[in-house]
Length: 142
Image 1 (cartoon, rainbow, N blue to C red):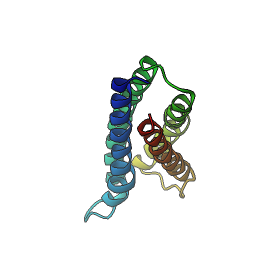
Image 2 (cartoon, rainbow, N blue to C red; image 1 turned 30 degrees about the vertical axis):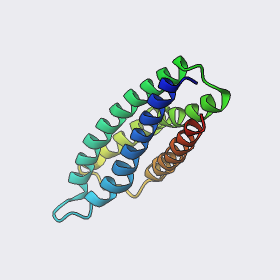
Image 3 (cartoon, rainbow, N blue to C red; image 1 turned 120 degrees about the vertical axis):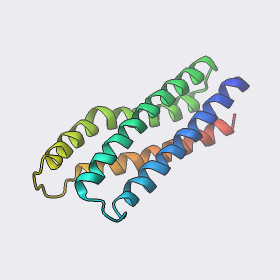
Image 4 (tube, one colour; image 1 turned 60 degrees about the horizontal axis):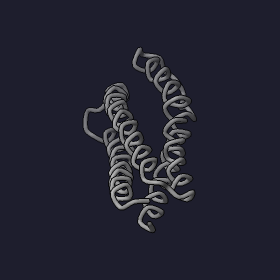
């Protein structure tokens, strides 16, 4: 890959990684510990924050794909890039809509037992963090 493509892809990768770690693994769990935050309020805030995060992730993924594609990538870079992008797609198309429907019900006042969907999302988010880290390492090697 050429130097500009590697630099852009690396910056985007680590920016994306930082955002996911900060939002998913710090902000999300901590907001529920704040005084006066109810489940409904926390869910409402979380939906807004994750909607914004996902929009930024889509933009970062697009820039990443473009930078890699224009940089004559090697197979390891292509494989490493595909993983976080694929995980994001799974989250956005398979998990988030179901979580949104569930949170709609909770926000409407329904009492629901805990769902495994949230755990699936956390597993995918953890895998995405590892995939972004691996991609960053692969890009540094170029």
